[in-house]
Amino acid sequence: MTEPLIRLTLDSPVGPLTVTARQGAICALRFADGGPRSSDVPVLQEAARQISAYFAKRLSDFDLPLDLRGSDHNLAVWREMRTIPCGETLTYGDIAQRIGSNPRAVGVACGANPIPLIVPCHRVIGKDGALVGFSGGDGKKTKARLLDHEAPALPLLSGLL
Image 1 (cartoon, one colour):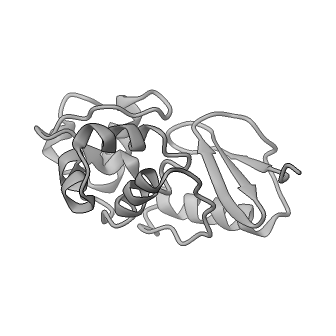
Image 2 (cartoon, helix red, strand yellow):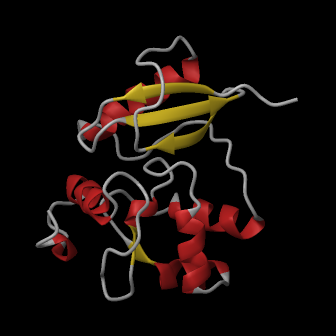
């Protein structure tokens, strides 16, 4: 039996975000318009509140129940991404070293992240500080906007906004 998915679309400074929940936990976030604009589902209401607070700079860490499904490697990468403080970055190599992997495999796991923003794959950058890969919104431009929102002084953003 397929578990029901419930969606809520929010407006944000980086465009519409559609949050999806399954059995009381967030299971996906897409940079797209794809659901109703209101919901009586508590976890979606809380996600909307926290996302709004994040963009208002009143929240730096999300505290939501997550339903992350993936390989053991992907789950390890996603767990490690959640430890990156708001306004800071790690390289794919940093994460690879921490979990005993390699940068390319970390990049693949970042690309497979079903809950970007909340699981902050935008905080993962290339070894030379380059903003490489981002599947949300306008790609690297959206990644740069999120990083600039968190830490406007990051030098790697010059020329991208």
